[in-house]
Amino acid sequence: MNRGAGRRSTNRRVLAALLAGTLLGTALALLLQATIARTATPLSPARALWQLWLLTFAGGLSGFALSTVRELQASNPDPAYHRPRRPPEQGGGSPSAGDS
Image (cartoon, rainbow, N blue to C red):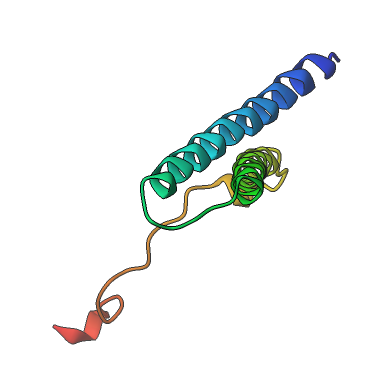
């Protein structure tokens, strides 16, 4: 059994999600910095740098977490977990034979 190839694919997906989240976080941070620069609100360069780092880290962490949870759900061995769930029935329940 060659389980290494599937594991590398999983790792690549998680790392790609981490990279995508990091890029989105950086783009959001730069957008916020550009918006703040055009307002009357003062923002020191040190605070702007920390904001950039924080949003970049948060974006990367969220992408990593979402991808990891998706991989954990896909690898769940319980067959009942993967079975489609029926939505709950609307109304007062099932009609009985004596209601006619």
